[in-house]
Amino acid sequence: MGSPRFSDFVSIRDFSKQEISFVLKKAKQMVPFASGEEKSNALEGKILGTLFYEPSTRTRLSFESAMLRLGGAVMGFSSPMGTSIEKGENLSDTIRVTETYADILVIRHPLEGAARLAADLSTKPVVNAGDGAGQHPTQTILDLFTMLESKEKLEGLNVVILGDLKFGRTVHSLSEALALFGANLTFVAPPSLELPKEVIAEIESKGCRPRYATALEDAVKDADVLYVTRIQKERFADATEYAKVAGSYRIDSKLLSKGKSTLSVMHPLPRISEIAPEVDSTSHSLYFKQAAYGIPVRMAILSMLLGVEF
Amino acid sequence: MIDHIETGAALSVLKILEVTGENIKSTVSVAMHVRSKKDEWKDIVKIEDRELYSDEVNRISLIAPRATINIIRDYNVAEKMKVELPSVVKGIVRCANPNCVTNSNEPVETSFLVVSQRPLTLKCHFCDRIQSSVEKYII
Image (tube, rainbow over all chains, first blue to last red):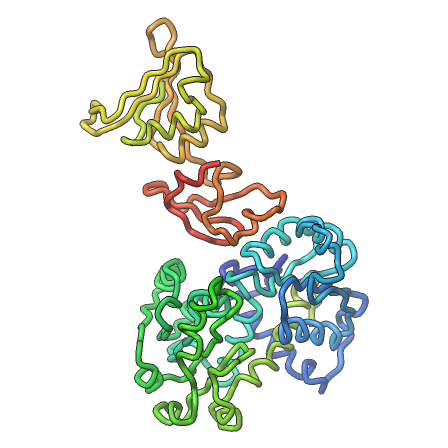
């Protein structure tokens, strides 16, 4: 298979299994560049525009690091404060203006579909870094990459996904991608935060028959990966609704002792209290490595979108 | 005359055509729950001296995908055409997702892929939301 050409990176649903596999392979090649072990100026002269309408630490900084380590430059904003958005400028105008300043745009926005709109308007490649409760495709690729690096396979992998399955955008894209690769999925969610019907339908259309568990102790028994997500306070309109479900689960050494010795815990971060700090130093913890893999994955995506071959 | 409207949808067709009963000078006839030749139930709307515009026909196709439009002159059917549901529905339906970018102040036309014709199911091009109760979202 030749190198696939991507014009934008908006939704994981836009890509075939072969295309995702190709990105994962590219990301593997980028690991020594991400760590600084090897140097490259492949993206010299290219400018990345980062348009972050919502807070971010890992996604924005890892995109910036990926661009800088490959010799490119970065400009943008990390919140709408201090920009024309505060004066009432709409997204469409911001895109039309900023695309003339940069070679590629990365956008995070609170509205679902914002990245698709940006991609439709922009002649430059657009990467979705999260649109409301919608998609976050580069997170999905880095989650797949982390599992592949750690477990050496995706097919047949037993993955338990826990937490806010309703609003968690990482969960929706990840579940669909894992289903595409033939992983076995088990979902555990507090009441009112279960996986939306559309996502279940999408997963089942890929031939996956997910399991739904209520007792976490039972779910982790045969799991290879426990993927934990945060209950997102910002997605609740009502503070009392948030209080009802917040803190309803906690991953600690006692729980992990019920699983396999090789069980790995992943989390897109930030975590609040859902993973006890005691887990950090155990062999189960994979979440910091997962965050670090954001760099090679985003290096691969940036270079592919900019049409730069390695 | 618009024939073969899904039973119960005649009043929605009138709403799409903005026929209120007060703003039209010609005769409007509505028949609801009528048995067709194929022994199925249907509604019929007949409006005299009224031309249908293409965007009205597109809107009607969303709630009455099997409808036929008969143009009657001198008591005879002069032209007969079926409404056709396009594969992409643009600008005539709002997205059911309140958090979709198309429901904000962006100057963007809504766009949906027709996932299924019966029951009518649309998928938003922007936010991927699947919606099947389309009638109340017609713009």
